[in-house]
Image (cartoon, rainbow, N blue to C red; front, side):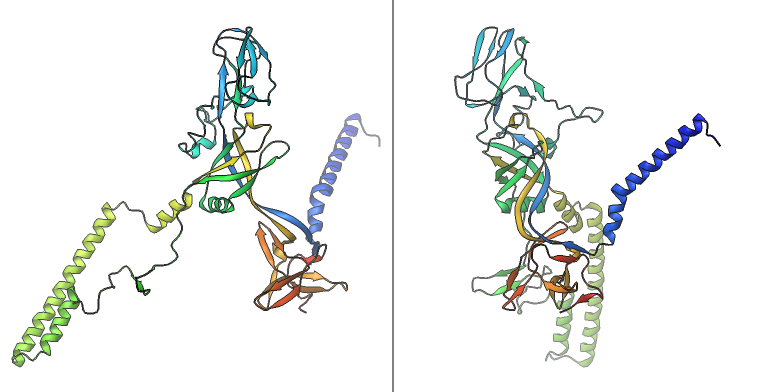
Length: 423
């Protein structure tokens, strides 16, 4: 049976689609499925970054120069050139324009030169980390080129910016801000094609309210006293107040040596008991009224609300840099990677770490193909990876030196199971 032309086309299309599906399966699906059945991985020596992603804005000292008169623009200095005072930068209509301060030449501007400066970066808020938006929610930020042909009066013709010290301003949550503050100096990976990494000093971090660790306070003699917040810190010889005071007076009256008859004592006791009940009821009514009033009029946040507000609070963090960066003149808004530390050692998968007899470790494949539990000494946990000591480590608690994992050891992916050797 001979196929028609349309039938051949349909058959070819069907074959092509089957081939595409097969290739997709082999490239993307099969490796993932096969990985499920792999029980081990190879431990390797390496370095992991302790890092945080942050939106930030670049702040620098810069000045934009404009043409005084109309005329043709001739650029004398190249972009990125470092110039001193009185250096000729451009000519406009035959008039030379000279640099009035030391700095780097730039021919791009964004109208933020006087908005985001070292003098104003302590005044702007978290909204400054992102460009302004129009009514449709689209960013209105634009990096523009200075006039390079014919200029009229007022046209920007060049910019000078200082690269001796420039800043990255960001706002971070409490935990991240503390980590950056404690680091003192960090490495920042900038978002250019080369992923340039530069050293930054932690210039400023908002004061972070530390959590209180104790409610005890020491007096001058070195003794500690605890205030439970309920007014229970009265001296022992102080007279009890309220209902407790009435009860105490009844007891004293009943057992007092006053010259009273039995009937008088009984009458007095009944009267005092009635007073106790009335006092207690009045106190309860007053307490209920005060509680209702507080619920209606109090605007104080609850503990949960205060904790939530503290978690949502962002802290101003300013990083300073004195390193040369070729794209500093055009850098403004960016998402960067702040690296606070680097941990080096054997890198393990978190899922492979288990615990035997109170000691953490992994199962290593020995030369006989058996899984043998091997203790580890953790340096740091970074995401889904753990960095540990290699070859040997010393445990101070047990005063013992252990042999541990080495480079290229085969590690069981999921610790434990019936197929392991506990020795």
